Image 1 (spheres, rainbow, N blue to C red):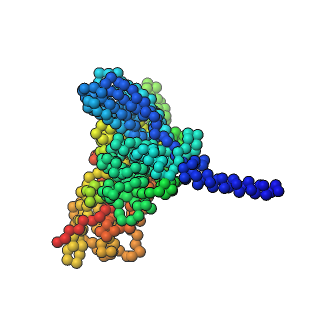
Image 2: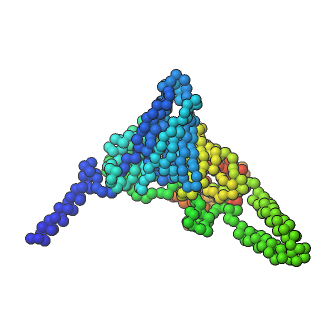
Image 3: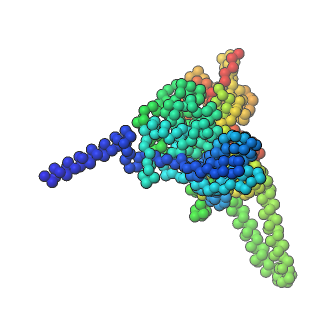
Length: 578
């Protein structure tokens, strides 16, 4: 009797657990460890003269990249106001500052976005208007143990379409969510690039065109976009979509697009997508923590620059010579010239040693910026643009000047608490005013960008031969192209030069995989996250080329001494008929 009761109890418990999971999908309550946490934050409104300021004091921050802070400004006066927003927070070895200047017209309501480095957990927001005392407010940035999802829409739309339940603060959510109004959403790539996924739960037609441009740039540079109610003009909003089932997910440049209709399907999509968190489109490596003695970079990873390694052998030789000069040399000098000569000789030897170090530093390192650069670029010929994921290593004796980046790009710092502090101004794009490259400090930066480009590879049929012209903007080191269903090796060509394709490659050859492996090995897996879709089979007329030089990333405009560089470019050739 007792065993029968025990069996019945077990069956009832199992039935209850099954019903709990089923009802969680139906909307009656989630089980433990399931659902999402709303981390959209709370707004705090204050009046500052004629300016009404609404600040979101606690928001979800991504794992990497930048946290977009929204500040709503409403000018209730009759004259325009120039408003300066500044955020200052402590991280690692110093302060980090982000700022932006906006103009608010009379009677205008404006939502200004201020991206701040995701390494910051808290800081002080400063609102300045000429002729008035600054307005100060403390802001806290919430981290998340799971995925971070940015919802461009309302929380109600997300609840109605996602199939994932909201978990209370005491629960254990699968991921955290931040919602933003589509009309006020950021128009900059940097505001999206760090989030695990971006979800548009409402009608995509309600999202403004310039916001869609930023979302499309996020997706094509390695982001993951989830749509629940796509409009009929989806192919215009996402022009790189190819034929296929977008329900199952299709590659979009370096990223991925998923469309889900039913709530249960969307729940499965989000669970599978966030179950395999990607480390990011690019993974620059930061300095080693203080407790990792002897390592230049975190995890014992080797630097990409040879010049960043300390010349230990040469310094030891110089120290040995100095010790001989001030040790046995001083004794010999004292015996021959007397003790007074030592008082003169030792300082002279020290001065000579210091001058030798300075001369050696100037002659060997110089005052130029040393760099090693690696990148993957997807050419979109139909829209005359280049989508680039890049990582670069930097080293210089003196600090660099101000560095500017366009709105359709983002500069990504390595993960870790010991990063060098920097100052960023977001007025008219991203401008690093301080801290991009500290003097005599090895530094790595990642870059994602979508920039206008007319780079192309031109094919021309000449009798029975196929000639190819390099119009990619740099020397073509090697490459491969698919013509007439057969793969050919591209000849080595200078920029603007022409060459003839040779014999087709053997059927079993895998040259594209080898090129990607060479890049991954040279960059020490810093670009491995972006190569999954890049190495897909080539379509007819498609090519992958290995270029030399500084590459197409935005920071390539800086004048550097290039130590190493590998840049792989994938695109569709342009055929010219005679």
